[in-house]
Image (cartoon, rainbow, N blue to C red; front, side, top):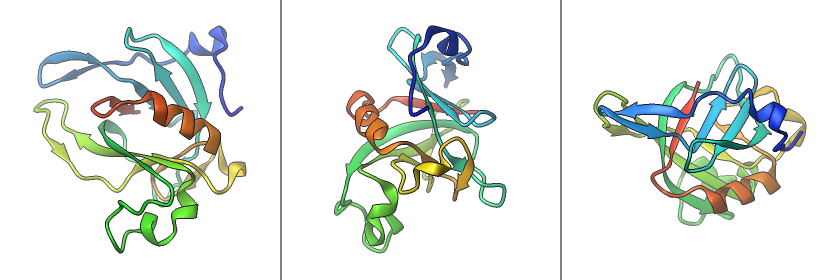
Amino acid sequence: MSGTSDTTVLACAPSPKITVAGEKKLAAIVVDLSQNVLYHYNDKGEAVAAYLVASGKKSTPTDKGLRIVTHIESYPYKSAPAGTKRRRNPGNYGPRIICLETVNPKTGARGKTGEFIHGNSNPKTLGKYASLGCIRMDNEVIKKLAREIKRGAFVLIK
């Protein structure tokens, strides 16, 4: 499954409700690591699509918690800092990268993370624990999602 909008699947989507520095908010994306499924929500908090993803393997797990979208990069990632993996090996990241920072839900303070939501050079890994911590998606799906997700959107990884 590269993606579905089937209402029976979306009815099982986790709640996108979050609290950041005492304010109630909605996540635009919730990643359920137990199922390796990414849920995309509209601005009313309704799940609109679910996608299989690959997340971190046991030795390099994807960290749970709250993230915020800082920006989106496009292949070949020439805007990425020199010396970074995505600059040296851009093909491993697919056509788009949704760049994230951590968010402390209590204070709203942000921090750096090396984890992204990005495309995938190996589609057979979708639905599996196969990455170094990033969340990998189907290349066509990440292009679509990157058009719909805006800077400042919240991502909950649970």
